[in-house]
Amino acid sequence: MLASRLVTTTTNTAVPGAIAAGALAFGAAGILAPKVLLGVYGLPATPPVRFLARLWGTRTAVLGALYLASPSEDSRRRMLVAEVALNAADAAIAAAAPGIPLRARVMAALTSAGFAGAGVAVLAGAV
Image (cartoon, rainbow, N blue to C red; front, side, top):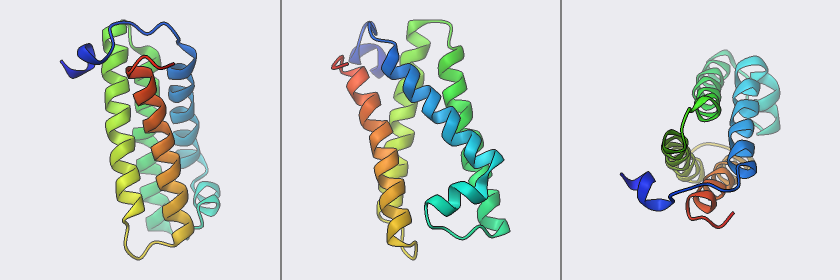
């Protein structure tokens, strides 16, 4: 598997744990306080947008929780690969989103790219 080939052992658990905690925190914000999260990103807190923020929050929080609950090094690597892929896709989609305010696009792209980059650094053994 790709995850197994990228790194054989994670010696530093602080960075991947922080990535997972960040996913839980952002996810919880999307679920429990979508108006606040949307406001920070400069997006309208209309009912349909709040609905989508909650869906995003759910999948983001679940990803973080699954990493933290993973029973083995191999399963944690797989979750980290999923996190990198998901955040890289989110960053690309956010950066290119037509009709979305610049502030929201930039903030979402940078946030997602930051999480993806941290995950890549862990998988590459740089941290």
